[in-house]
Each structure stands twice: as structure tokens, then as C-alpha cells.
Image 1 (cartoon, rainbow, N blue to C red):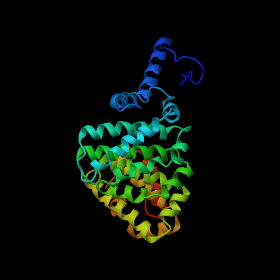
Image 2 (image 1 turned 180 degrees about the horizontal axis):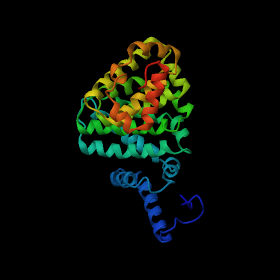
Image 3 (image 1 turned 90 degrees about the vertical axis):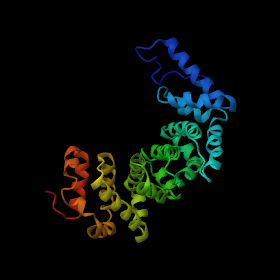
Image 4 (image 1 turned 120 degrees about the horizontal axis):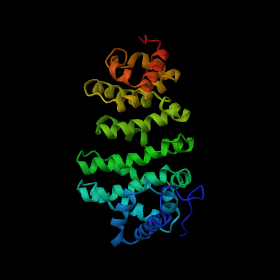
Length: 293
């Protein structure tokens, strides 16, 4: 595999050209070492730790011989540890390193579409189905959510349509209801990005059952947030509500079911500290024709 130059054809200022070559050579060697089970664990660790330091890594991972198959093998090999739930910290760390590299591929504009076309995200859904709250399982769910989050981050309709053909919404809603704060935050972000797309918003609001499930979980989260505040989680919850209020049928329902905590001063301090979130909250109140101040 040839090592491409940086995109501008020049070496990054402040770095020794020889060091650059050595670093890239190491990455390419680690990718080769993924093919052997004996050397894979160390290669996974090194690549995942340093995955953000070489911009070409997603291209190398996707187009190098057998690499994605090796990452999928790591994911599939852990299935027996899910049921019955026997997953250990060592097993979890190893597969999460593989998932981190998948997230790297999902984040890149050149590799995201083929990654999606190969339906690789479906291999992660068994991890999202798990409910055990131990650290190995929580880490596994969170890292899997990170891959989905990387896919939706760029607001591509093709990604949303793919996800809507799967069970990602009910899986996200369950994690939003029962996961850790960080997992809830990523799952809510995924729902928010689905709702941001018109296809996703129309899908959720198409039937009463879909909308009511989303509204019920969001309502429970608001009640929990009133007792255990989290600015980063509240941000995504309010953006979900604000986007739902853009749909006429959902807006009519929200008039009846919007939690009181979003209408009063419960979150005043958090909103005052985050002008962006307050803007979305104001938009929600205007759509509902409720007083803002």
C-alpha cells in the first residue's frame, strides 16, 4: 500500500519529514498486523489510540485487504458473551477498539457511504439490545452508539433513510430511558439528528404510536433532568421537542403533553448559561404559543 502525501502535498509545518514517514509506516504496519489473530490485539489498541492523528486512516482501513473483515470478526466474536451476559472488561476493551476504528470509517466522507452500503452498522445492533448495566456492557453500548452518532452527524438523507429501515429509534429510546447519562446523551443526539431530517420527522409523526413513544420517553427524561440536571443532555432533549413542534400533528399533541418543567423556571439557570439551547427552547414556546418570559 502506498503512503499518500498530505492533502496539500506538503509536510505539516513544525514536524520532521522523517518522523512523518515513520508514523505513517507504523500505521500501515499495524493495519497489516490486524490480519493475524496473534498480533491483532496490540494493533487494535495502537490504531484506536492514535486514530485521530492521521487523516488518511479511514481510507487505509476501508480499502486495505481484509481489514474491515477483521474488524467485523472482532465484533461477531463477542456475541456469545452477550447472552448469557459474561462479557469481561478485557473482551469489552478489545471489541471497543475495533468499534472505534469503525467510527473512524463512519466519520469520513469518502468511506461513510460504502460503510453504509455494506450495512455494517447492523452488526452493532446486538450490543444496543443489551440491558446489563455493568461497565463492560455500558462501554460496549456507548462505543456502538458512537458509530451511529458518527453516521448521523453530517445530516445526510441517505443515512437517515437507512436507519429508519432498522430498529434504531426504539433502541435509542430504550437507552434514553435506562442508560447512563453519557449513553442517554448520545442516543438522544441520534434521535435529534433523525428528527432534523424531514423524512425522519415525518416517520416519527406518521402514527400516534410512534409519536407517543418518543414523547413519553422525552417526558420521563425531563422529569429526571429536573432532579439530576445535565446541560448537555437537556440541550438534545429540547432540540428534539423543538423539532417535533415543526410538525402540525405533533404540535397539537405537544400542547397537551409537554412537561410542565419546560414551561416554568425549572431549567432557567441552565438555559441562561446556554444561549443556543435557549434559542431552541424559545422556538418551541413560540410554536406552542406559550409565554417566553
